[in-house]
Length: 428
Image (tube, rainbow, N blue to C red):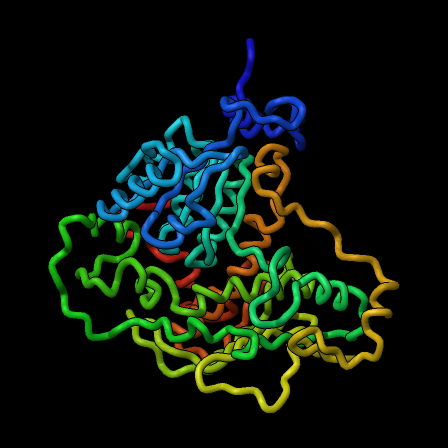
């Protein structure tokens, strides 16, 4: 009896016995038969979910289903599917129906972050592989739950920020690879300090903040607002809470810090070799934050046990003069890979290149090998973001963090934000 690709992948995921699925099983000689083509469903098609890079089909995988709680978004997605692919996509209002669609192999989660963990866990339980937008989760505790579910159900997880392995890193004029090679060489010395500032483009979404004077308004008939809120606390509807401006409210996200923070911090985590480490201290310089609406901040500093630091510069903070991106006891690196170590490129040529990374997500789904940015290192870089949001929300100038327990030291209020309650009936 012939076993097709979908049944095979689910069987392998359930058994957890193989690390590699031979490509011939999925269509010999590199050709993928239509019945063996990977399929994807997208949850959330109001923004990035229907972008050119994600709302697509080709010979390797096919978009077959979409889900949204806004009927206008859903109709736009259906119309776009007809326009681009000449077919009618399966449309769902409830994400659980898409997740349990037997024709969907990969679930792409493009919702606001307050849904990311819950949907990732449910997708893993349903035997689906997961492509999740950043930030990975809204809290530290949710990140731990995602790791547990992905590994328990043997799923493949991809976090959608790619600067650790492709493209020129925001505003820096270089890819991450030579920076990683330089740090690994030890030529800069140790410990290192990385400064992420406006010169590297970090400020371009900095002013994504909320409003603290929202007047309740009627819910549009096309929007299921209760389902949009989901596990978040109930707050009266206002258009600024939802869709493109939801990032300005703590219940759903954390402003520009969480929207862009993982894009910037994940490559730094990789460069410094911190994929399995957490900082031991976070310091925040910011005005007092509103309890509901995200505000601006000036500077956030993360310090590791070995003395390495990551500094995020925000509103009103300008580094003096020509500030290095990476600096150590023996040298500094500036924008454009300008280095104070003479003849740096020839020196680096004597050192090995960084270990290759698995950057083809679809191939990882087929081979059942971890993607380059997965649930584990993704949780570590997302924790950097969430450490910052905890410090900001509580107005803490400094918080101590225990990497072993993933809890704050002697701060009950901070620890209460690690696992935040979900509005019923939602839970992980």
